[in-house]
Image (tube, rainbow, N blue to C red):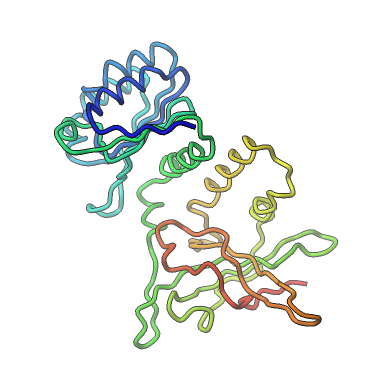
Length: 294
């Protein structure tokens, strides 16, 4: 792995790295002055490179619609990402080149950014880091404005003098049922302040065998590349995940730990959280939320 930090001539640095692409370029940059990169992007398309761009759906971008349409006709895939609120943005500034190189930092690929104090970090040959950026890119790519609004929605607790937020947590039993190997769970509402003492079950008997299989990864004997690909599949599956029309903010499993001859701790371990409401969900709850299927 190599890491380089850049602070000068960042437009030139980005151009230089783009020209090295031989297979694919995925760009998630909030603000881009497309005319600055049009020539290099078209040359990459001529060389058979697949280009996918995500940027914010803002006024400075919309003013460039003629250049954007021209690039689209040439073969560049460009999506303007809409957010539910006017003050929210797809605010990233990163690119993935050939699945091996990451460009990331404060630098927007814009005319204005060329005149600002900005930074750019170039990371090469670090599969785990690359995989995280690919996960994030695919997550944004698969979400539309309506889905993002749904993921961001969370209710306030109605308890007196409580300013907590209510999250929907899908809690699965600790292990599959014998003979059938089915896995069951309940969807519970839980306040970020009141915690497990005031949860409410809103759906019971939820079954998702595929989801359960995702979290048995250690048993799958995957090599490093397969493991990274598997993690991306899980992340894609869970983003926007819902059951019975209820948006799921977090997923957990009931756990049991023996600590004495006849003593055990029973708790729920949260293994995934929706990124928009993660602050409202604890990592562990000292209860099984009444989830018990024999």
